[in-house]
Amino acid sequence: MARTILAMGGAGFTMEPANPALDDFILTLSSAREPKVLFLPTASGDPNVQISAFRATFGDRACRPIHVSLFRLEQHPHDLRALILGQDIVYVGGGSMRNLLAIWREHELDVLLRDAWESGVVLAGLSAGAMCWFQNGITRSAGSPAPAAGLGFLPGSMTVHRDGDPTRLPVFLDAIARGVIPGGYAVDDGAGLLFDDDQLVRVVSSRPDARAYRVQRSGERALQTAIEPELLRGATHGPRRDVPADIREFRAERYGAAGRR
Image (cartoon, rainbow, N blue to C red):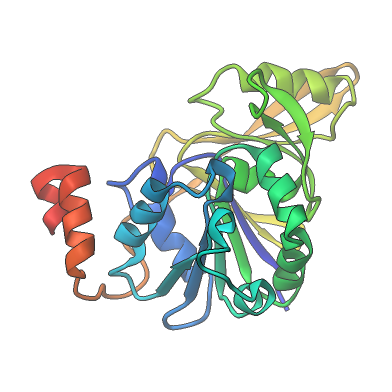
């Protein structure tokens, strides 16, 4: 059974709400006609704004969206194992990578997510929700960019927001050059890396200028090699359903009159 991960440098509904290309692409990664999609906004502290944006984005698509707030389990308890293993797709939001992993480990989600991945559940995420699958990432959890250990589902390392946060890349290159972390990938906002098992099989983007780079250690240097992505165009996962009233209202508040459609 294929084990699939989509790691995005940044984008999706929390960063490019008017550009659905990557979010639509995520839905195509499941063979289910209406995939069950679980959103984990843990890295940002389960904020209502992210949860509402998720509902606004996926509420009228051909899928069954749900979220879990680990910060509010006393109010909304779940059998986490049954819930996670019962999904087709798990989508992880951005925020603090270190905090994300600490909270996941407290609830044993690190183990549950590996079991889900091994059983064929698609894992996807952006920013901290992308770096967490690798051996290492560059996080700003403590303020300044610094290397941090991830879950190690995927070999190597990743840094995100290559074009949007110029402070991360020098730290990433230096850590690879010194052998502190293994080589890996530097990814722009709007670009995503698709892995089957531990092999990179596709690089996609939601906009023409987004790029990804393979970074390898060579002597005492870190060398970047550009990877030309495939530009995604438009919705790719079938017809949308009627938009529920609460989602229309949220879109109107967030995007103005154009969001009512």
